Amino acid sequence: MGRLDAGAALRSGPTRLGRHLRRGAPAYGVLLIALLLTGLAWYYVRQNVEAQTQVRFDETTRATQEAIERRAKAYLDAILGARGLFYASQEVEREEWKSYVRGVEPEDRLKGLQGLAFAEYVKPEEREAYARESQEKGLLELRPDLNPGGQRSAYFPLKFMAPSNEANRRRVNLDLYAYPAYRTAMDAARDSGSPRATGTVNVLTEPGPNANADLALRPGFAVYLPVYRQGEPQGTVAERRRALRGFVVGFFKWDGLLDGVFGGGFDPAIDFELYDSREVGSSPRLYDSDSVPRAGKPEAKTLFSEESQIEVAGRKWSLYFATLPRFEEGAGSDLPVFVLASGVAVSLLLFGITLLLVRSRTLAERTSKDLEDANRELEGANRELEAFSYSVSHDLRAPLRTIDGFSRILLEDYADRLDEEGEDYLGRVRGASKHMDTLIEDLLDLSRVSRGPLRREVIDLSAMARDIVKKLERSHPERRVKFVAQERVVAFGDANLLAVALENLLGNAWKFTSKRDEATIEFGAVPHGSGSVAYYVRDDGAGFDSRYADKLFGAFQRLHGSEEFEGTGIGLATVQRIVQRHGGTVWAESEVGEGATFCFTLGGRQGDSPRKAEVW
Image 1 (cartoon, rainbow, N blue to C red):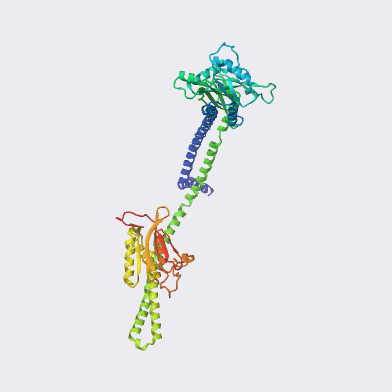
Image 2 (cartoon, one colour):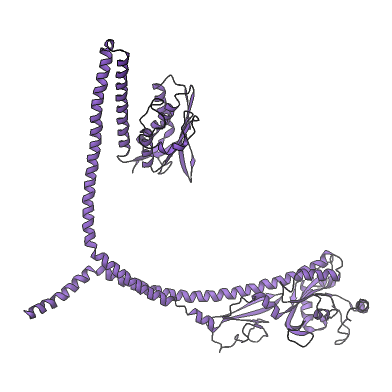
């Protein structure tokens, strides 16, 4: 017996496994697809991280280059502004020059600017007179003297130099045209009419905080901008040479220039090097962010590197960028691993959820069948309720008609036997029965507007409103009412239901203006909201207190007594039901004694083609 049980257990194991796999096939399919998507997501994220690292490197290099170009432009603008002083007046005094240089704020805004000078063009025959004038003013003598090179064809002593520190005062009357490094840039600027920069030169500056010397020489460069005499032609090189008046000269320090560019915010994980030519490997290195040269060295292994060139005052500078080990460590983001682990976890979670859904599928199908049965029972109950409401309404009207009929017979056949009080009682009975009949009819109307399909079509509401008012005028010919209807007011809705709504609204307007000798009723439409339309019925009748506007649209709600204005309180509830079936809203605005305005909107589309109605 034990062996039989064991064999049955062995046979039932694969059977249960097969049944489990068949039922759980969707869950295992979800698991397989989720794991496949996780693998794809991991691969995509890894590629994206690498691309973002490249983008970050590219953005850093681009931002650095743009910062250098912006700062170079700021320096050139300061030089161009200084030339404007000469074009604005015949002579520029030394104090004017100092005032302008103070205005450009070299200590704060242009930290790389050591000094701004004006080198005046002095012809050989004017040299001695210029030297005597400088000596009389107590300035340094013109230097260098005739050596080296003997008598020169032109002299360009620095006449003005600011800011007024010791290093700049030492340069006054220094003629740098005697030196080839400066002469090349000066000749190029004179002949082109544009600013031209020297190569790397030594710039005389104030000493550092721990230096013992009075002054210091630091690597930098100079920029020359020609100043021409106004009114003289400058179209050719020869004409520009004849019109030359001098040069505005800017002296710049390399360290101050780049400190102003980066301001301590440069990414330390990227090496930046600046070279004074197109060839980064063989030209002088002007700046290195970490003092370790890497450009042009094959042994320097970097994740990313890039070379570019910029032009400043006619001179090409080469920029070299390379990633440092810290940058490469940051590029190894944990995001791909996180995506992989999260994807596996989510895959298992989806597998478990799907497995639970599969197990509850049978229960869901059973529940769905039960719901269908319940819906059929509910539909039957609604039909029975509808039949009951009709039956009750019609059964109630039969005795009312009997009461009204017998009351009328009594008044007609036994009038001579009834006194005035008896006739009054019978009149009240007939009035109450008629009111009850009207109330039942209104309740039936309210029931009708809630049933049946909604057949939408394009309707001319203006024509419909005029027809309704004409009926009112025929039934009350003694009334003097002016009706104003806006032309071509159309709507997209159910014609029968909208006719009922307008009959109630216009009927109310007609009723509540009955106390006036001459009344006005208006119908039209105005824009409302974004592209929609609001329709309105306005009268100048009794009006109502706006505080109770929300109560108007409830069944059996009345703001006026029946002895003042007759009615059942069902009409506005019917209007609201019709408007809501169209997907719109209805509201009222009024003040006591100043008339009332009833507005409503309709959902659906406006101005559709009337060729075909739609059932909703």
